[in-house]
Amino acid sequence: MDRIRWPRRGDVLLAAVVAAGCLAGTAVTATPADRPWWPGGAALVVAGATALAWRHRAPVAVLALVLAAVAPYYWLGYPDGPASLMVALAMYTVATRLSWPASVGAGLVLFGVWVGLEAAITAREGVTGPADRDHLMWIVVTVAVGVAVGGVRRAQAAAAERAQEAARRRREEERVRLAREVHDVVSHSLAMISVQAGVGAHVADRRPEQAVAALLEIKEASRAALAELRTTLAVLREAEPPEANGLHRLDEVTRVAGLAGVDVEVRGSAGRLDPAVDDAAFRIVREAVTNTVRHARGARRVTVDVTRDDGQVRLRVADDGGPAAPPRPGHGLRGLAEHAAAVGGRSSVTSGPEGFVVEAALPAASR
Image (cartoon, rainbow, N blue to C red; front, side, top):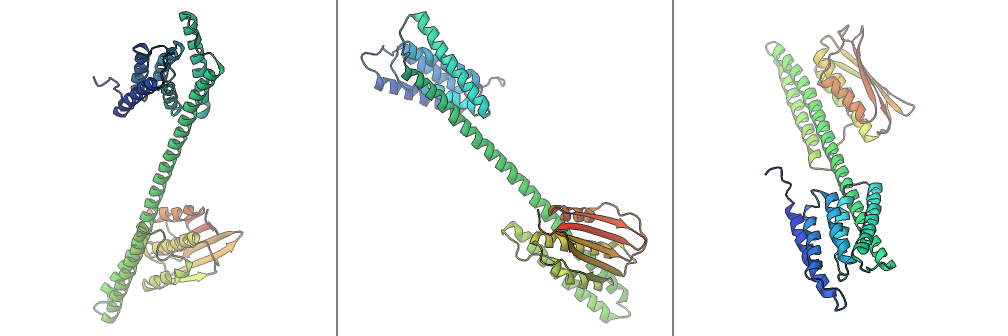
């Protein structure tokens, strides 16, 4: 029983409405000169409408069955009525499944089969059907309406599907971006808080005033981290974040790193940048400095070189932590690459005799 392809409830309802409409329309348009449409003509109309109940399950077969009922109806001399609309509806259903060229081809085949079937019925039954130009034009119009409306509906459905896919990609990209920004904020702030907590614990007995200063810096770093997290999460509710990051905020990175005993020197300027590029550049520099504070234990100085030439912004962040093993992949390094790639740039991390070096090349305008 599970394998039986029962018709959809909506299609059954539509078939009933079409049957009732066609029968009522035929009763209204019938004249005494027409061939009596009851019961033969009514049976053909009901048969065609019944086939429409399966139009979504087997559209091509339904089109053939509807045509097999409608063509005899007209060529056996029954009253003109809305029965041909059943062919248009069946053709519409087929066209929603096919491309434009295939729909046109199916329409041409339908026209040829319809005319040929009527001609065969005429020859077999010996009746004189409406073989005039107006009847042939009505067949053309019926087929064309089905092809055109079905093609438009298919194009609309395809456009809606593409829009949904694009929206899904945007949501995924936004999720990744927010996760990356939250990671940046949390890792940077916690690294500095950890350093200050270590300093405070180390000098608490001998220099309590320095321990108090470290606690105050922890408080300030926590407040700043919470504020930036609120700014980042506000993107979920607002079209634009309340405040954008940029290289103009590097003094905050310099100040916080200085509390951890790392001197940061910024050399050069990038000038006015696209906001997205400015934000990416700031995050790359901050992540690089944070990595130095967390991992380059012997580092006491970080040099940040910012240059702009040939439509590109070049960043170079180098520390003096001494020889080190090649960097291991992690969230921080992946975040550097993602920030650069988000605006159409690239980044790299290398280790040399003096320490780690982070380099990035970003376009002056985001792509």
